Image 1 (cartoon, rainbow, N blue to C red):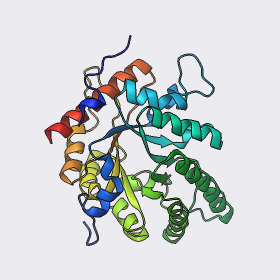
Image 2 (image 1 turned 180 degrees about the vertical axis):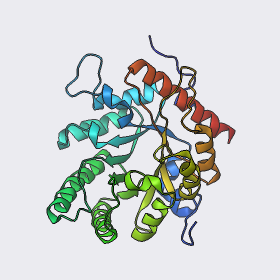
Image 3 (image 1 turned 45 degrees about the vertical axis):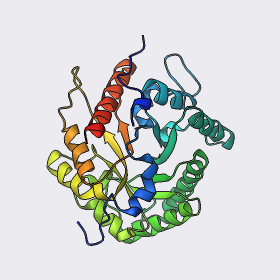
Image 4 (image 1 turned 60 degrees about the horizontal axis):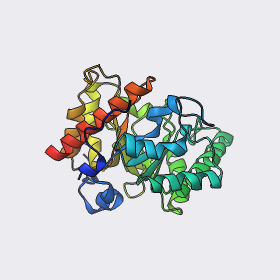
Amino acid sequence: MCFILPMTRRDILRSSCAVAASSPAIQAESGQLQKKTGIVTASLTPHFSSPQRPGKFTLLDFPQFAGEELGLEVIDFNTMNIFDYRPTYLDKLRASIAKHGCIATNLKMNQKVNMASPNPEHRHEAMRVYKRSIDAAQQLGCRWVRPLPQREKPDTALQKAAFDELIDYAGERKITVLVENFGWMMNDSDSVINLVENIGVDRVKVGIDTGNWTNNRIRYPALEKTFPHAVTCDFKAKEMTKEFEHPTYDLKRCFTIGWNAGFRGPWCLEHGNRDFTKAKRELIQLRTLLVQWIAEA
C-alpha cells in the first residue's frame, strides 16, 4: 500500500570577508533552487541494488521514486550509489532525471582517498579518482562536487594545493567545489569558515550539513556562522520516534537558523532507515515539515 503524500511538489510554491546568503554571489549560485526540497541518495543506500533485485531499486529508478513517491525535486548524488561510470549509463541516468522533472545538483565524492596525503602517490591517486567523478558530475548535469574530508586535519599547505588543483579542474567543466562540515571539521564551529578563507571565498562554496557537528553545543553556533556561506544544505535527521519526533537535536531550530541567515535552499533531506516502509514515511514527514516551515517563513 502506498503512503499518501500530504502534499505534492506541485503544491509547493563572522569574518570581514563573510558573504551573506542573500548576496548576488550566493543567489547566482543557487537562485533557481530557492525553496526547493530534495534528497541525498545516500539516505537510501541499503535499498539500492545493481542489478535489480527483489525489494530493491536501481539508481536509474531513483528520480521517479524521489519525484513521484516522495515529492522531492532536487537530487544530491553520492558516489557510493553510482555503480557504473560508463558514459552510456550516465546518459541514461541524466535522461531519467530530466524525464521525472528532477534537478541533479551535487555529487558527493565519498571515495576513500586522501588528496592531501603526505604520500605523493596517494595524492596522485586521489586526484585521478576525483577527476573521474567530476567528469561524471558534469555528464549528470551537476553544478557542485564535494571531496571527502579526512578524520584527521591535514597539512594546511597540502590541503590548499589539493583544493586548488581540484577547483581548477572542476572550473573548466563549469562545476564548483564545495566544503562540507565533516571529518576533522565537526569539532570546531569555525572550521568551515577558516577553510573557506584559506582557499579563497571566490574559489570555493559551502555545502552545509545540519547533522554533522559533534554535539549541540557546537552545532547551533556553527550553523549560525556557516549558513551565510552555504549554497546548499543537507538537512539531516537521525533516528526518529514513531511519532516522528527527533530527540537528537531540534530540526526546526536548524531550519530557522538557516532561514534567518538568508539561506533559501535547496534543502536536501539526508535520512534513512533499513526498514524501507519506515524510511519512506519518515522522509515524507520531513519533507512535509520543511514545506510547512518554508511557507510559514
